[in-house]
Image (tube, rainbow, N blue to C red):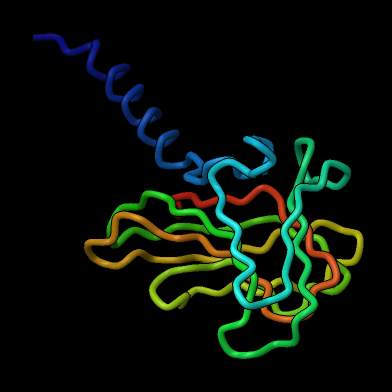
Length: 170
């Protein structure tokens, strides 16, 4: 019995699985899709902070827009502005979480998530340059979704965020 068809079939399946595993799990990662002046797929909560989130059509790492966060509130417990999105995940899987940021004064701000926000990858001052912030997270046994959070916890003059990614760690 000849199985000459099996090699191309297996190669095709392997490539499809690799492409699926490497796809970005974040919906609307570049904040390009809008509906009634809201960024689709994302939730903004200013919380108890005097924080704002705005779509910026003039500053972007890629595409046409980014989001800009500001905050005038001093750092205090449980006071923050929060941008979030839930993404599907596989239990006990390692992922890379990243975004591009730009800010001359980001204050205490970060991207992360997990149980009790155990994963926090802080933003540093970048000046006029875009810098990628990334970290690795591992999901818990039984966990099927992960809330990505982007927080501003202290005075933030202007912090631009673009190209958020959540990918399977390779």
